[in-house]
Structures are given as C-alpha cells and as structure tokens.
Image (cartoon, rainbow, N blue to C red; front, side, top):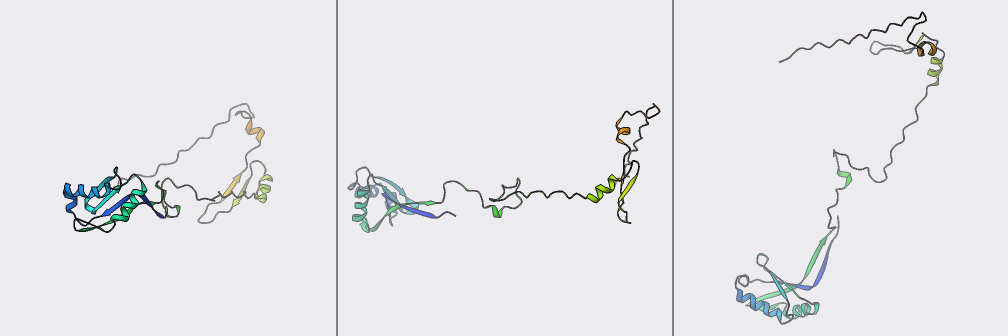
Length: 196
C-alpha cells in the first residue's frame, strides 16, 4: 500500500462557515467575497453548501497568508469564520496496480511466474543396459518376456522382428509371389442399451 501524503496549497484557503443562510442569500455572499477582495482583486470562490465550506483561490501566496492571518476566527454576520490552507491529498500511484501474486488462485489464464522462478531441468533418462543386452542377444523370431504376468496384470513380451534385409526389401516373397497382407480384425463395438 502506498503512503498517504498531504501537501499544503499556499494559494487556496478553506473557510468553515456555520451560517447556512450565507449560501442562500446573494447579498450575504457579496459581503463575504468583499472581505477577501481587499487582499486580492482577482480572487475566486467556490461555495460548497452541503459541507458548509468555501474554497477561496488567490493569485499569490502572500495575499492568501495575509488574509488568513487577519480573518481567521473573525466574526461574520454574528458567526465565527475559520480559515485553513487547502491541502491536496495524494494516496499512492495515479495508476491502478495489479493484485499481489500470492492471493491469485484458479485464474485463467495462469499468471506469470513469480520473480526468480526457474524451470526445472528434466532428469536424464535411465538406460537399462541389462535390458538392452538381453534384447541384443535375441535372434530373429524369438520372444523375450520382460514382465511376467500376474492375476491382475498382463505380461510384457518382446517379439523380435525378422532380419532387416528380408523385411526391408520388396513385398514379394522368396518364391516371387506377393506376401499376403494380414487381415485387420475390427474391434467389436460395446453393447448399447437405451436407459430411460
């Protein structure tokens, strides 16, 4: 959170008035304005009836300081007039800032990673040399059981292909005829029953 700072405006005075009739009667306003025009001919006024305040804007700071020194706690129409220098309040930055990242949950799209975050490096793959050695000892057409089956899990079996020279050649057999393509059996669709 940003700190609240207050600056005094030496050109402006705020008059605190108890008499609400002064805001409604033009002759009362004119006599009030004449009190301050004696210090500065170009003074301007802003009347805030609901706050019972008047903002008095001077053209120089000396006139504002002199008016406050002479008219503060003075009597106007049987009521005391209090004068204060106007203060401008500045709270934080003029721009809206994003929320703190520690409170963001389930946002879509996800927020940017926090400062200092680094991606974890992938671990190097584990190479099972015993498995590679066992597979290399297999000959064409042999099979090797990697994981024996249990009542709840299937077994994992590796079937070694035939020689590369035989399988990488033409689709023709040694006899000169074409090798028959294996027929692909379609998987049976599950039974569908309409439930209502």
